[in-house]
Image (tube, rainbow over all chains, first blue to last red; front, side, top):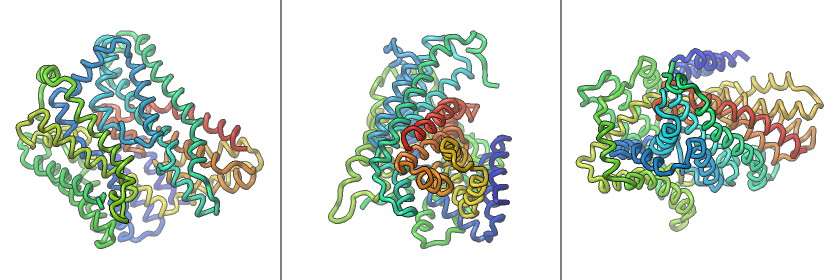
Amino acid sequence: MWVLLAVAIVVVGFALRLNAMLVVTVSGIAAGLIAGLTPLAILNAFGNGFAGSRSVTVFIVVLPVIGLIERYGLQDQARRLIGKLRGLTVGRLLATYLFIRQATAALGLTAIGGPAQAVRPVVAPMAEAAAERAHGGLGEKVREKVRSYAASADTVGLFFGEDIFVAVGSILLITGFVDATYGLKLDALQIALWAIPTAICALVIHGFRMLRLDRTLANLPAAELEAPVR
Amino acid sequence: MIKVEWFYWLVGAFFAVIAVLRLLDRGATKRVGSAVFWGILAFTFVYGSLVVAKTAPAWVEGIAVLVLAALAAVGFPGRGSEETTSGPERRLLAERYGNKLFIPALLIPLVAVFFGAVLAKVNVGTQPLLQTGSATIIGLGVAAVIAFVVSLVLLRVPSPMIPFREGDRLLGHIGWAAILPQFLATLGLLFTASGVGTAVQRITNAVLPKGVLLLAVVVYCLGMALFTIIMGNAFAAFPIMTAAIGWPVLVQGFDGNPAAIFAIGMLAGFCGTLVTPMAANFNLVPAALLEMRDKYGPIKAQIPTAAILLVVNMGVMYLVAF
């Protein structure tokens, strides 16, 4: 049970907002030492874990292109484009993006969207421009709220869309684990079908919250609308 | 066969270019330490291929990883000198290039999807064209290269170093958070190897009420969410909570439908992923990419949805699975 101390290190470290890399490293070493791993085994675990998870960092290779088209005015063009679409408020824009993200992920097209490829260069600037058009100059706090909502539309759409697609990691993990452990023969399609009720609820709940953003911003007093981040 | 390792080398090469850029960047603060950080990272991406193939000792990579953590803890890497266009210049450029600017941005998903959905199913002789299970990663890498070349031609960029300097500018905003997801994946492995899972399982068994279906459903879903919050990954939580409650209590004890229980249980875990800083790639990296001061901003935007969806999952499971 002492190994839960390592979990406590992470929880306390994140709560105190200490340097996350330091917290994670210290917690990992602590977990290994408490469990009686040798220092060499701990080093091997760090090496194997890092080498085996390089795929999550591959999104980095799009940064030169994104940076380049930003240099040539992509974000301004995204704002100009939203200026022509009068009826598209920030709430409607983000609800639409949520729907597209979720629907494409459900078809297995998870590469459409993502924070580096879509949210930073296109979705967030459009959302900010739409909010500015309706509510005037935004303070930093409201600007960050709009960006947070844009990021959340991307993530929620991905999570509750991809699980409807049969050949996705989480479904393969479920069937792989329970078939091997309990001798079942679960059909991946069945798992995918049972994800649909939650997916619909996710779209309704998060879509509603995206649409509500319009009213929330409209009801903010001017002082709050222009407030900086603490 | 196209191997995914090639694209890890591509990422490594990008980090190496960033290291050199930083070393030559006289305007940068923390010049040498930042160059060392990106240089070591480039090494881990190439050496990692040998570690995965088990042809070189993993502890060398482990030492490099700990050095990266130490450098991050004392404030490396810093930002470069960020030479880019000004706001007014960008407005003029946007008027000049117009919607052409979207072409490279749209090419990335189009090419990536083509690889993930079409080429992933193509065989050359008896072998698949793309390494099995890595089609999306390969597609993203190829897409980035194609979009890179297209944007150079389309925008008549005078020097191919300009996109790298722009990439460095964006990477400067992300800093060490760029590799935090990999650190957390490593931590997950160490937690599992150290028996965190079995410890949590013992606690769950101790608090689990016997014989009340609704409570068992609530504990399974809540456990999935909480354990995902701790581990940062629903995949790590699933085997543990399923062995503790999902299989013995819900399927065997209450004769539930296993497909529905496991599918919805996993989605309850996803509600945890939405609110935990441990899932850095989904929650902290976007905040860094969007240059937000409040790095927990996306999590705060997701908490209400996650909380309601968790209750929805409990309700759906209770209603449809038994």
